[in-house]
Image 1 (cartoon, rainbow, N blue to C red):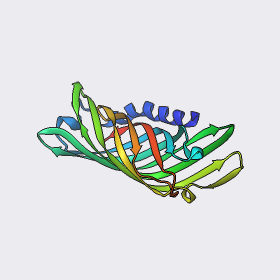
Image 2 (image 1 turned 180 degrees about the horizontal axis):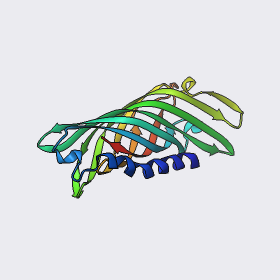
Image 3 (image 1 turned 30 degrees about the vertical axis):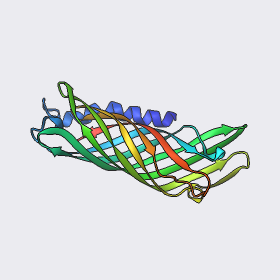
Image 4 (image 1 turned 45 degrees about the vertical axis):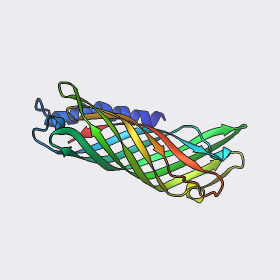
Length: 211
């Protein structure tokens, strides 16, 4: 957790330096003067959990990283509405202590979000960007650990690799510097069990730059 927070804080402190390369006064993609598309880089923190009918898989929050790149395009010249997608490496899962026994699950995904954003101009070069959409994800790595039985196995022996759900949140942009907070609500039952359903949950905080 400390390493993740240190990495994100270092990135956030470095963002103004990146922004200086193109800081030419009123440069902002939402002014619609020079661009109708943008590219961005993101680094963030996930606070994930699992909601399951199975007690040993109904797990509380665990932290992980999220890193990726995004692409956005304006949907209409007459309105500040944007469509954004991208590709992320995103760590989810959960951990919990149940009756004195610790359980943990790490689920690492390659994730593709697709959201619509609306830009609200609240000050000079400062924009509020609420967004809503969804995501699809494919499991890449993962481990489930039962500290009582001292066993460890691949997450994909218990869970299906595919996940999808809703995404909503709000971003904040000043010049090239961007930050956002949002929530992924998993709708896909990722459990392989015929009796117990499991869904992912994830609160995320990302920082980055847009070009």
